[in-house]
Amino acid sequence: MTKKILIINGPNLNLLGEREENKYGTNTLDEVKKNCETHAKLINIEIKFEQSNIEGEIVTKIQKAKGIFDGIIINAAGYTHTSVAILDALLAIKLPTIEVHITNIYSREDFRKKSLISKAANGIICGFGIKGYIMALDSIVEILKK
Image (cartoon, rainbow, N blue to C red):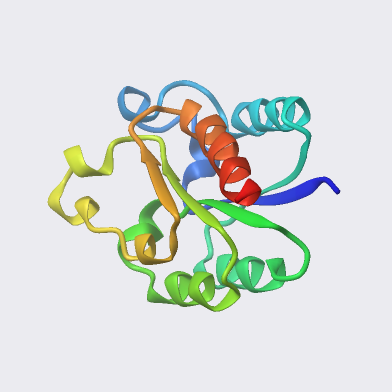
């Protein structure tokens, strides 16, 4: 049976390719989605790729994932550092989760060095640009094999 992975992107990631290109690169979120879709086919999984700027919508997406998806990849963006609600949702559904960030959050401003959602993650991938999403897909497949 093909595994299904939900990929959730948080606030302002819809502006990839336009914002702070020196940090986030020139690829758009649509390009990231296409890369993930292509790789998902290669590794024989299904993905659903989502983005929201609204914390409550992200929480709802996480809650609805239970029973439908086998795992979650999440780039909570700015909510990484502030959202107890996203952490609680991830803890509640108990799905394997990979936290991904385009930049290395530990080499940035002090407030970005703290991830509230990491407690719910099986692993964190950060600092590899958009390639981190592909690394996360490969990693979640390995977790699901165990």
